Structure formats: structure tokens, C-alpha cells
Length: 347
Image (cartoon, rainbow, N blue to C red):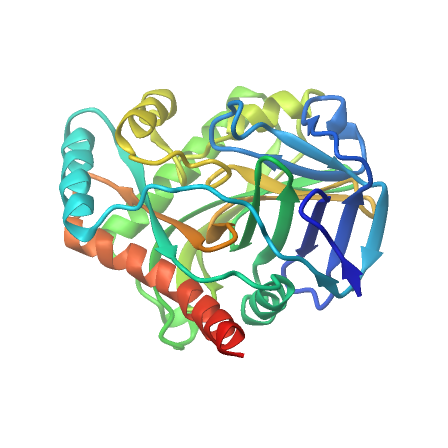
């Protein structure tokens, strides 16, 4: 048992389709900034949606790597987050729909769902998410003075094995009803939403003169949800750090055109996204790097869980349907949290 404290810098994670998990520990308490130099080192990167003094791009250096450790960690972070009610959400989505009908092909709108519970030992939650979401990247990291986050992301950002790299275009959401994936059908709105992301990534690869191959879109599972996905295999230019910044944020978490959509989100959303819809993951561990888009995630305080959920808005979106989609996304995680920590509090 490794007992971790509030001032400890660490990242606990499990890769998709793996029974194993790893703990990266940094033994000093210095916040290292992620840049082109740290990209070459062994550790764990945490990159926000927008870099600022509250949520910097951080590199957790690997002073020691543990395989399959059991840990104990209680988040003692304090703070407030801005949640909005259903009516406010519907009104804002309507504004986003109007914007897409005039200026944007797609734009992502997100909100925060707050669960007020004493959070308890977080290893229980990490281990449960690892068992439930076997095809997701499950993680827990702590940065003193910045925050504690956990998530189970279905979306790879960039993965690397040797000289080979991979990224994905993932978008569109529907409930997983348990039918064979080859029999799943998709609506026109979801197909176009995913195609926008696919075209964006393909254009960026072409602009950077990167040789690539891609799959046809296919249905992928993420627990109780299904998504449309296209894989790209490629070898990047020498400036990998610059290429990561070109790709981030993808239309799956931002919109098209990217710069103006990002500015619109920053102006209109009533909360700061922080590390939600950024990217994170292990770098140069066992000759691999595995970076994931930070979706299905939460910020964890002493007395609450702040769940971040969002959806792609297009001119054809229906506000009530978008609310229902975010409810599905938040409820899958909320059910797990309440089952564990209501029992924990009662005990």
C-alpha cells in the first residue's frame, strides 16, 4: 500500500484493454512545464484546454514507476465550480445552434454536473472505472495547488510505438443497447459530426506534409455509449511538439473553424474547462507514448466531484436532445461515484 498525500505529485493510469496499471511518482514538489524538451523525457503530461496560470501544461517526471500498486489517496483540494441548470443550458445551446447556422460548422458546448459527497479514498473509484471501462484510458493525477482529476477517456489523441504514430477522429454518441456493432446505425447528424473531425485531422496531416493511412469510420464502444471512429496511422515531422499543438484542440472538443470556435467557447461557457478537453497520458514509458483527449472526466475536491460533459452542436441540433446526451454521459459516471461513496460515507 502506497499512501499518497496532498502535496504529492503523481499520476496513476491504466491503458485501454489492459489489466495492469502504473503509478508515476515525482519526488519533489516542483511543477514542471510541458514543452519540447520535456517531450523527450519519461513521465506523464497534463495539457489543458487553454493554458493559463490556473491550469498550466504540466509534465510529471518519472522519478519512479510502480506496476500494479495499491494506493491510498484523499483529495483535500477546495474550490468552487459553476454548474448551470437545465433551463440555462437549453437557452445557451439555442445560442450555440444559432451561431452554427451563421458562422460555424460545429461547436462544442459543455457543462459541469456537481455531486456533493465527501470524496473518500480515490483508489476505489479508480479501480472500479478500470474494471467498467476496459476500452478506455483510466487515470488519476494530483498536482498540489492546481487540482486532482480522474477520468475514463475513450478517445486517443496521439499514440506512439517506435517510429509509428496513430491518432483518431471520434465523434457522435448513442446508447450502447448491446446489439452487434456491425448492426448499429447512425443518423445523418452524427455521421456529419464525425466526418467534420475526420476531415479536420486529414487536412492538418496534409498541411504538415505527413504521410498517413486511415481506416473507414466504424462504431466503437465506450461503456454504455457508442461513438463513430476513424483511425489515422502516420509518421510526424521532426517537430512533434509543434504538431501536437496544431492538432489540439480537435473539432471533437472545440469546433470548426477552430480558432473562432475556441474563442466563442471561452466567451460563452460559464465555467473554465481546465483540463477537460485537453490531453494527457504517459510519455516514453516502456518505449511508448500514449496521449488521450481528456473526456469523461471529473475534478475532485474534498467535498464534491465536478463532472465535465459536453456535446457537438451543429445547425441541426435540438437543444433537448443535447441535454439528454449530456445526462447520459454524466449519469454513467455519477452512478459509479454514488454507489461507492454513499456506501463509504454510510460506513
